[in-house]
Length: 330
Ligand SMILES: [Fe+2]
Ligand SMILES: [Fe+2]
Picture 1: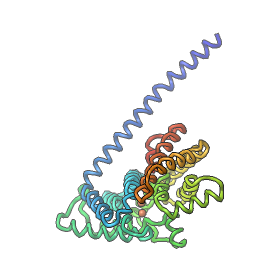
Picture 2: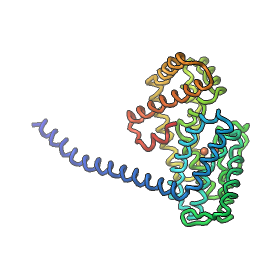
Picture 3: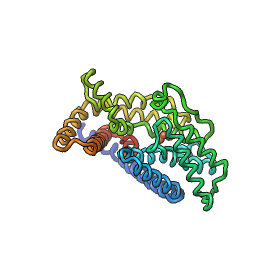
Picture 4: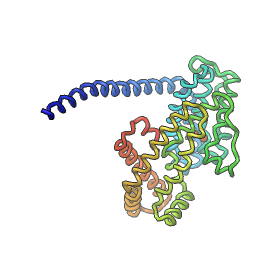
């Protein structure tokens, strides 16, 4: 009797929960569709800017092949920043002109990254934007129905100049800060870039640097861990600060949630000895192949791919949604 009451109760609960669950799934679906449509619209409206950036990256890689390994990280980053920026443009209620300035600044904010020192990539980006404006002069293009006035161009340049105060860059700059965001466009560009840095993307960048790899290997010997864990620790120490660095209320809310998810994934990977397993796997494969520059690059890519797979698995085990996971991955 008791059991059947319990079953009835469970049945009732299920009846209540299930439609809610379905509704949840539909909301996510609609959300994803909305996002895809939004993305396609931006790609179309801003096609000349995307095209220009693509050419710049190709030109820079032709000059310096070693930078090619950075490109996929950068492309992932660019995509995430743009998505976060569009959310912030909406929540911060920017004007249509400021929206255009923000989107163009976002597309171009790291355009100088493949051809400059990291501490001056904003200056290189501004140089490229100037080159782009020069080429556009004759065609006078419109973006979402808005012409690029001098004011909009100036805002694009300022926002690129003022996007640099990530704790890592400030640290590299001897603690000295870069120009601070001032207007609404600067702030959205800055916040979106910081939000996109909450996650494991910088692990990809760090793994690709021989100097950092050496540093992390040394730390691993000292603290009896392993080099990937040290790379994660290094990146995470900046990640956890970013909710205190973003400027708007809406960015702070997103930052707090994303930091929590990143921390949970890091703990999960550590507890399940994923880093050690990946290191062993990669070294087994690498040993079989010749040691040359290309090989180093491909072991970085292999490590990165294996880590991304494990981050996905960890996220699923921890109930973190796909959209967040995509932003956290490298
Ligand atoms: Fe940047
Ligand atoms: Fe960036």
